[in-house]
Length: 566
Image (cartoon, rainbow, N blue to C red):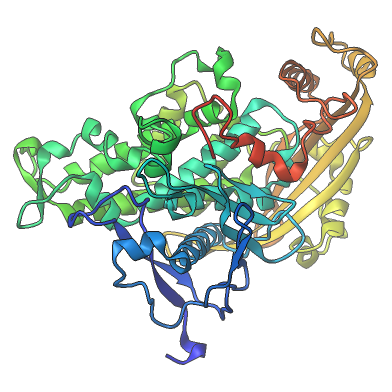
């Protein structure tokens, strides 16, 4: 095919990890479609560069770029596990597919959170059961467990879930870089929980994998209706993340997370254990999986004859898997689109529900399948709610903004023009101008709605900061400092918002966290102080004391006792 007509490249990947088997009892694989681009050896494309360097062994390998036809299309299982060239293809294909999913949902090209265009993928970075995103190295680093006790090596790079999870960290860092600043516990939980959500839903979008979750089919490709129950679907192979690496790290107990099997307790928000990012992120994973299973079950039951007890009937397994993949793909796009509507700082879990709902209204006003109602209900069951008037409260202004002297074209791309808009409308938008204020991003997007029409928007974010002593904050706020914080302690406070303009340059949404919400600021400082998140100078709110680029290395440390290792 001539280069100028290529749009994609089909590459074979291990669909979950080498421990998950297909109907033929071989490693379950799938073919993923990634955007076509010119590639060099590594492989190396315009966004990803595979660097196969093993720091533990001191070994570097350069792998050829994938040719027009996948050389691993018919490769046996042994080759998939042992051939490092396939490992390079696995990380490149899965990371590329993940980035393409985000860009399709958000309607634009995305930038990384660091300076540069290439995210390095290191499939055999070190001999350790860990994998993480490193901002300083501009890399996703995948570890491995060497062969021992008659067991072959276990490679985190061969887990589809792990690669998606780590790629999502890098994408999130580019979208909301301030979420690595010290914040309330929900902020770190978003990175972990959302990365899991994307990993699980991404796996669900591959019908061959979903078929395995439904159990064996008979000779005609049908399954018993008894498998079409919430309990059966919950206990499928897709309710966990990283099966094989989880077996290593949890001493044989199974996948790293089983959120769908263990609903959170009603009082989770007050339990100390749920302040830990992975544990708190489980709340988000549990809710989204419940939503997916609800929607999928409704789709499956609708395939049976009306009025018939479906547990006594059968169903075509391929069709059932297709319904699951459709539901997962739709839900995944909904969740990703919501990221644009998040505030740039001070994230809390209700912000995500609010953002997803607002973004979905813009794309699908009718919501015929009632996805939004299901989301509100499921989040509400774990105490995460939005105001009853959420659909109309997105633009909370004292009076309509003025556009006098504004250049509408510049509002779509120019940070200075957006700052001018903020300055002219500060009182209308409730923005206090005495604080340091900067416009950080101005990002146009174009998405295709279910009616086929293009939804054009511009999303801009601004951040406000204030450095002062804790005692000064106490005087300004009129509230008492949390116990244990010395009035002389330097503190840094954040505020900010997200502005969404329509295709004509008119403001339609303002999602914000005001810097002057002193009760929130004191709650944040109380959490940071209580959890020991001070920088090297014992200040609060500036950093947590770790290098920014190593935030995920520490979060995923296998020596932690959280049951999580990446």
